[in-house]
Length: 160
Image 1 (spheres, one colour):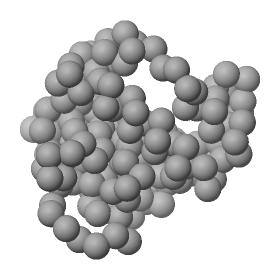
Image 2 (image 1 turned 45 degrees about the horizontal axis):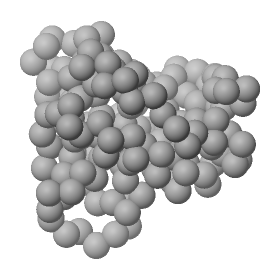
Image 3 (image 1 turned 180 degrees about the horizontal axis):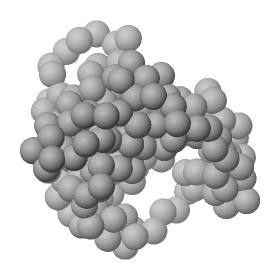
């Protein structure tokens, strides 16, 4: 765990954040998830070039939040209308500083206001312990295909 430092601040994502989010995503997958997935799987999950228009469309289609530490984007997450958390990524340099926890607490508050009965996600091998620590249970393991590679993840949920 890193030293505590300032607490993460949560704000709504803006279109101008898209390039930073794509870079954070690539860096997080390549530096953090690489302990649980092989190099071919990592490159299939986080290739060198991402579709910027697709990221902008995704960002605009659901509430997305960024966590900042001292003004720098340290992580991001989203929430679909049915309670699905599609993405939650924390910058490799900000692991263990409460970034994901802060994002999840924000998501939970929003979900409760919206009257959602559950949150669910497909957690990577790397993210599974985080979600388990925060009350999510595994529904099932599954294999997903990304660019010809098979990756294991876990369907998980938490009742609110």
